[in-house]
Image (cartoon, rainbow, N blue to C red; front, side, top):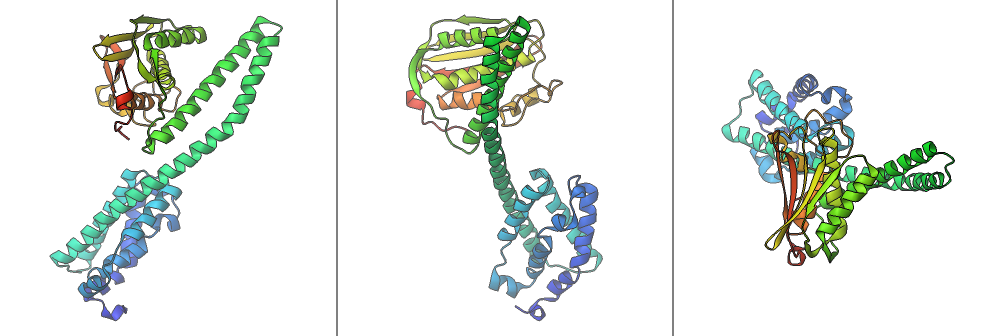
Length: 372
């Protein structure tokens, strides 16, 4: 449709395009810390095209004839922000809000009068653009993260295997105890890196909405807890106490072992120096509870849920601890995949306890929904 067919309001808005975009660019650079780092072509992105579509919304006939759809433009905007900026979703939403404020302010300053319906059309389209941009941003960011993790774990495997084999050879042929101890430390840390890469790969699976692969078999959970405790004490100087009663059931041994190792490693990192960590296995009717307890600084109440989010950890004074922030989300997914849950209690007086509570027989619940 030719420009002459546009309404006076549309033409007036189009005439202000450069001024509105310049004003928004200035406000965005001053307000959004991430925007200040972007060159103009990247900061402006698809905004000029989006602006033109909004202007045409003020022409009733144009809108009725074309049904101007901002979805594609907004999706491209969100995708580019995910790929080319350091934005998060909050910044993405905020820049749209700033754009709306600047737009209506500039229209008012230049005496461009809009009807109620015209203002609603613009506001609704911006709201729609926000939704589409955030959705595209999340999808692209997730895909990029998965590509990065897949490449990282793939590239780590060969050198990690070489390090482990070399450490074993050095340990077996070490001429002195000092060299043997150094080789042991190399082997232990290589195992830690391997465990971290496995956690990352698992997070890629369940963050994408896929279920953890469970291989259910009958075994005694108490014996598993004892074995994990013994292995941990062999690798570290930390005392791990185990209180248990026999608990034979149908579960996935490998996933529960890794969940317990994650909880135990977490308890060791955050315990009060010099104190032991306690593992307890207790049966309650047709359910069993596997808990890990440590004394130390409590988890802030406001963090008790966020610590189970992927790539997040409690913000307390110990955020410098190493790790990807995926161990606790993995433990929760293991509990949920067995038809159970994980509960955390934490206080200065009683310490911190993570408790996996699952049915004795997980077979009927292996297809139960889990939280993404």
